[in-house]
Image 1 (spheres, rainbow, N blue to C red):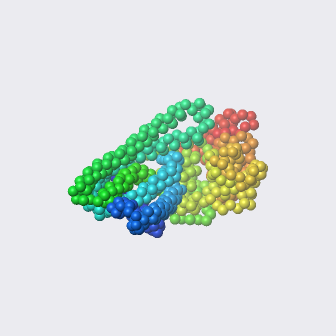
Image 2: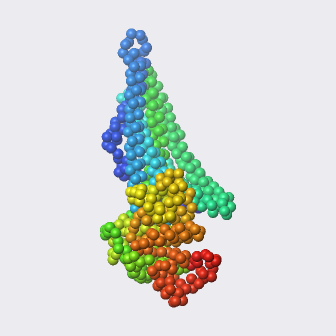
Image 3: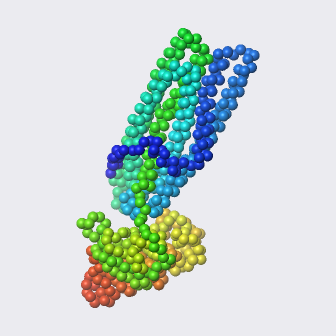
Length: 594
């Protein structure tokens, strides 16, 4: 997939865009003041260099003129002052940059934690992490370094121009030719750079996504011998990114020779006129050399100022991407109702869920269901019948397109999200663990009580394994706890649910893909977990389903049947047909799977 073209949209003026960044990079006024004050001191020392040389050339090196011997000492002091001022200025702006990046990263991360769930289906994990970490880091450093350069070189340029005006204002007017020329070059090339930078961001995201996919799917790729095709895919995107980088380098590199050419033309004209003035109007050698030296000193800050277009453009593009995330990502909608601990009564009234358009097949279609506190309800049915969608409605991981979902008589849209989700514990087929200690994973989101962690681990049938770990419950599990077996990960998820001690339990295929021994241990742990809780089970295993208080059979987003195992078997409907097929397909001694 090639990088998508970036639409040309009207952008606010540069000053307004930079001003908005001051929200995060404003920093302390003390640091900004110190940074620019010391930059000003460093800039003022620049014209003093040729000014110190002028009396030496005009008066000669005759011995006995004690005042002239002060010049070398003054030069040493001048360089010392300039060096110290530049150091303080750079340190102050570095403080501002790093503190600003920290504030912006914190804001973006908090945005992600509270973002509407649709964001995570629109953007990949690599894109979001790239924006929060890399783009902010790169953009902040580039922009603040550019501001440091602008302040230093801009003030140096002004100081030198004033000195040139003092020496010879007529000659200095020629230098004014540089200003519109350099401004036009920077405007044209910076616009080109901005467009290329945005294209480069998209290409980088797509390349990072390919790497992310192949890291996550490394076993599948190797099993199907797909290394060559994935390498080709990577190479195509890498080549596209390389072309954009080359174009960006060309646009950036063109600024320096063009501005230097303008400066050389102006300098040549100045030299010719200065030589003529020295012959006709008696311009002193010291005055001539001081003027030419100051003129030559102008070239370096002009060249650096021209080069600033590149880091400013790249820095703005990177930071504005983060700001777009701040602006475009809305928080999950929520209400204000709170409860310490719910009773666990759940009601669905004419609930409908459409994942796409109204004309698409509905994931749930006018579902009516009531679950009493403490009741265990199992949901079964063919794949795609809406079981998981129904369970995900309750913690508002899915929003209903129509109808109402109520918990304890209150629409879940009226609940404060933190309070609502505190009422649920979930154990699913896809267990997610953080790269932290086992204790931190069990107590996720709560303070770690070590005794309670041990109790939950024991209740989840994990004590023997935890005791074998090098640091017990303080062992770091690594990336998604992949060093644990599937059954151990499931039991660790059960220990987490036990620790949370929520009144409502959601089990979504919690025993799927487990061997017989692992399933037995998980089932024992689940029985402890389900005690005294309202429990919703999505499962295929007959042993999990048949002991439920009620079984709800789903088909094409609707409730086809509901009742106990015996009632549904006597009804001889969809459930009975699924059950009979499962029993006939099971191996001797194997738990039938619907």
